[in-house]
Amino acid sequence: MTKAEQREKIGIALAALTAGRRAEKSARIRAEIAKELARASAVMAFVPTDREPDIAPLFVCRAAAYPRTGPDGEMEAVVPSAWGTGRFGIAEPAEGRTVPPEQLDLVLVPLTAFDAENRRLGRGGGYYDGYLKRCVNARKVGVAFAEQKLDEVVADEYDVRLDAVIYA
Image (tube, rainbow, N blue to C red; front, top):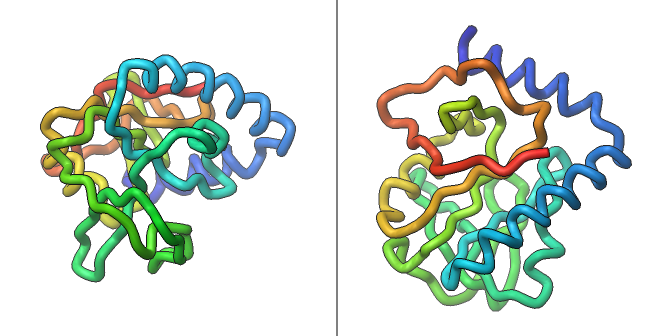
């Protein structure tokens, strides 16, 4: 199976999740992420799309950096002082304080699919893979629904393996 075929398979599985099941699973995922947050001081989260677990309530009262993408495939972590919309239509910091990747100790990573070996299939841009290589002190934790788990994710040599995946 190719990466494109794996993305299509997961897309079908996610489309079948009802709003109620998404909310229920998101609550269980947030409970597990809260345990990771208890041990972390410098965190990079992400703004979830409608197909991803809703982790936003965890960051209502806790500061976190969020990814901001650049035109050349680079990504940086920014604690936002103002929000905008990135090139993929996802909310991202328009302004704020940049956090060097080596200062992060937890990075929560969205994904399209994952497997038991913590291999991650992203959306195909390589933004996270390039960035995660620079997060030398961070625990890299994927966040997903159980429906996104595959027997084996197609991975290339540049794909970064996660330390763990939290899913429900």
